[in-house]
Length: 629
Image 1: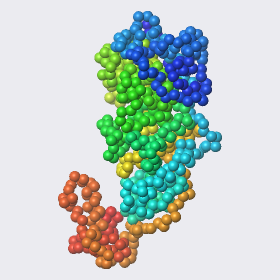
Image 2 (image 1 turned 45 degrees about the vertical axis):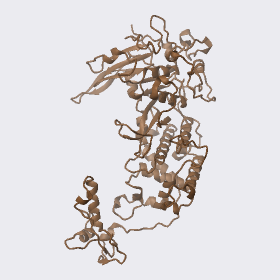
Image 3 (image 1 turned 90 degrees about the horizontal axis):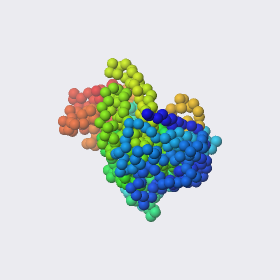
Image 4 (image 1 turned 90 degrees about the vertical axis):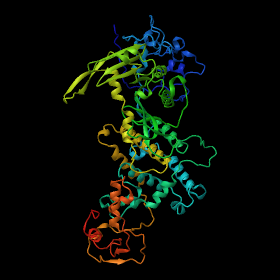
């Protein structure tokens, strides 16, 4: 007969102690109150471990080393959360006999899940001074004075003649050292370009020839000149390339200090809730880069792959890791993806506290679920049917009715197949599989029906989207080319800091989440970063506004004394280019709109126009708004 088991529930309480090893986890997982000791990121299994490394039954310890429940001091509540012998004839769960002992009943004792049911860590913002109330102040928690001073110093260093990669660079010849105020203004307008006002190229923000009068943006010209912006963007740097202590074998050494500094501060100012989401995301780039990845199933197919560990409800980044090749192998039995999960949870200091990790099938493995349960991390996720140790009966089970399910359990591990539009396999190491709820599903005739949904599936569906939410909010615009991949990562990491500061901002203002949108928050951040900074350089206007074409005046043709044989009619050139953009497969010679050379220009408009017989360019330019038609 199936046993009913109460599911883990979120609760508030004091924050638990950061833990070190397996014995510390067993002794103090429930009762520890101190948070002053640092978490040792060493994996809690020694290299001398034998084949029983994957055994959920830890070495015998005395009663003093067992966790004590807050609500009870009975023998059941004092039993080890990972003591899965359970008595009876069922075998001890090891890698060798994992394929044996699967059953259609769930008999795991409730004490095995005490750490999940009694999760009592305080979550939300911490260590934030009372005077921090504005958005720019929350961002300053991550981008402090040390960050800006280093960015200014390294940019100035990079622009010096000895460090220039291109000695004849136009922007290098006139470069003068920047300062903190100018750098903040530069970053402010750069992120305004990325998230608020998107144009095809950087130069378009300073364009004043009136071709796109609706998108005219004089504010950028008021802050700094176009050439100064492009000069700062060209020499933006984070590290000293001549520093002997710099590990250049690290493929991300150019941005590694920024990323590590941000991740430490992310965890210092925020404690995540119980449910965490883990997924991989792509930072779009097509640069020539050895760590560039191609993932066919992703919306962004080319880019740098990042593994994110986020809070499920808000998408707050707790930890992140960029793929640079084979990473550190902590447990060789888990494979490359399994070790990614272990590295993320250990370096984020979430092991041993009763967190629940929600992942997709890319990381799935029954062995990984066992290992995470040893360090008191719950797992619920989809799983591929061809993975090792998945019970055959679950893989081959045919379910005809939508909403029906079938499971088999082995100790605390449950494999389940649930029928939606198609069968989906799930794995969990802390759920009771026979507890069901309901879900709405739309039928082919557009009516909505209620179907049975196991709580295991509902939890996965409810908490899987944390990383997706973060990725949607911190997306990068792909219409503009980024010339160097370190700048691409700089923009992404800074956007992570902006979004995390937004979560802190919302957490300190209850009820503000429905009134403050992230887009408006970013806009306010950019304006605050620019502040009162204004460029002292003289702004030159190279072109007059387009509407001068329609004004009365001396619109007569004359042959310019500075004209050369390379001057092209502006109307013919526009027709040629528009056809080229609309028909990229057509060769240049087959373009019906030829580039006509001329030495005649309008005396008032100062534009070259062809005035040959049968040409309509002169009249079209002076009478039509869309003169290329």
